[in-house]
Length: 323
Length: 271
Picture 1 (cartoon, rainbow over the protein chains, first blue to last red):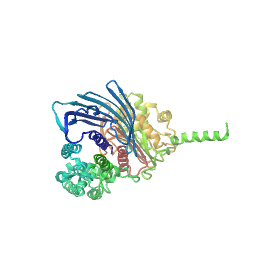
Picture 2 (picture 1 turned 135 degrees about the vertical axis):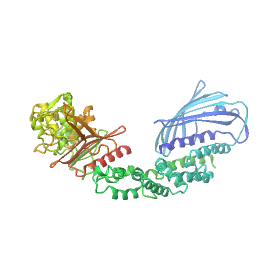
Picture 3 (picture 1 turned 120 degrees about the vertical axis):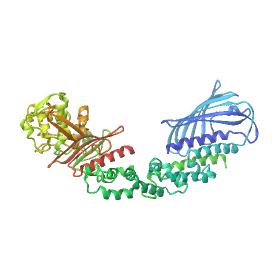
Picture 4 (picture 1 turned 90 degrees about the horizontal axis):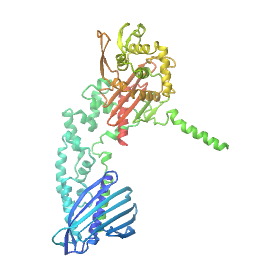
C-alpha cells in the first residue's frame, strides 16, 4: 500500500498545479518546471521536469500554497522576497499540515513544502521541492483539460513501457482507452512465464497476479504449465516451491517412510524438505511459502488496497477536474 | 506498609520473575515435537514447550565439556589416552590406551562424532579425573546461571541427577558459540584427525544430519541415550538472521528440527 502513496500524492499535487492553470486559449510564456518529492523512510519520486505554458504576468501564483476547501491557511507572511506559509488540512481520514516557503521573480521561482500527517490512515511525512524558470519565446495557454490530456498521454506511454497495470486495468483507469494494447502485451508476457525459470522470477510477484486478473488472463493455468514443464525437467526446487499437487505426489513417492539423511540425500531433497519437515503444530511456513491452490491468487496477491488507493487518487483527480 | 500495597508489590515481584524463571513466556506452538523444546530466533525465544524442565541431555552435555576445554586455551597440548578413557561406552572412535592425541583433535572427535573415548580423555586431561571435571562443569553451569542444570558425568551418559533444561542448553550453547573455535568445530561436516605420532588416522563425519542438508545449518550437537531419547541442539544462519533451537527427546528430531528452523525463518521474514 505504501508504494502507492507517492502516486496518490503526485495526483493531488497535479490537481493543485492544474487548478492554477489559466482559462482557455490566451497568450502565455513557456516555463520549465521541476518537482521532486522525498518521503520519510527512503521513498521518493524522482525529479519530474515539465514544460508548460503559463499565463503572462501570473508568475506570482507559481509555487503558492495549494488551496482547497479541506485546508485552512493558518499562517502566511512575506519575509523579503520569501513567502512563508503554514496550512492545516482535514478531510475525513486525512489530517495533515503543510509548511512551506516560496520565493520568486518574473523569471523564476523556487520553493519547498513539508507535509506531515496521515492520509487514508497512512502516515505521511513528505518534502516536496519545486522550481520553475521562464524560457524564451511565447506560447498559447491551453485549457486545463487539454493540458491534462497531454500530460496523461505521456504518462500512459511511460506506464505502457513499464507495464504499470493500474493505469490501464483498474476501474476508470486513466489510460483505459489503451487497455486492449496493454493486455496484448500482458498476454505475451504471461505466455513467457510457462518457462519455470521465468515464472520463478516474475510469476510469484503480486503485480503479475494483478496484471493477469486485470486483463482476464488465467495465471493459474500458466502456473500449471510451468509445473508440468518443471516435472519434465526435474526442476524439483521449482516443484517444491510452486507446485502443490505435483510436490505432494512426489513427496509421497520419494520421501515418505525414508529417514531424514536418506531422503535429503536424494535429488528430491527440496520436495522432502517442503513436505516432510513439517513439525506438528502451527503452520508458519505455509503462509510464507506455500503456493496458493490452483486458480486462486496468493494472499499477497489479493486485490490489495493498491488498486483501491490508486483509484481513489484518480477519482480525486477526476473530481477536481470535473470530467 | 499497608496490606494491599504489600500484596501489590508481592504480585509485581511474582509477575516480574515468572516469565524469566518458568520459561512459559514463549508460545508452545509445537507441543508434540519433543518432550521439551525451545526455538530462539535472533536472540528471542519464539516457541518453547517444557523448556524449563530438567531432563537428561545426553551428549548435548559435551557442549559444556568443549566450553571448558576451549576456555583453558591449550588446544595444541598432547594428551595420553588412559585405559579408562579407551574403555568408554557408547559412541567412540576407537582410541587405544596409550594413544597420544592433541587436545584439538580430541575435541573434534567429541563434537563431530560425539566420541565418548575422546570426551573422557579430555576430562581426565583437564582435571585429573572425571569427578573433578564434573565439579568444574557444575561450577561453570552455576556461573552461567543455568539453574536447571546438574551434571553427574563428563560426556552425557544417563545417570540419576544428570539433567539440563532446554532453556539452559540454549544459554550454554550461546556461551560456547561465543568461542570461535567451538563454532568452527561444531559446524564441521567432516574432519580427519591423527594420533600425535601420525601413525593412526581417524576420518570423522558429523553426527549432525542437518549439516549439508538444511540451508544455513551451522552446527552444534546431537545426542541420544535411552533415557534422553533423540536430542538436537542446532544453529542455523541465513543472511543476518540466526536461529538456535533445541529438542530434547524428539522422536522425529531431524525432520522436526529442519521444519522448526524453516518456520522460524518464515516467522522472521513475515515480521
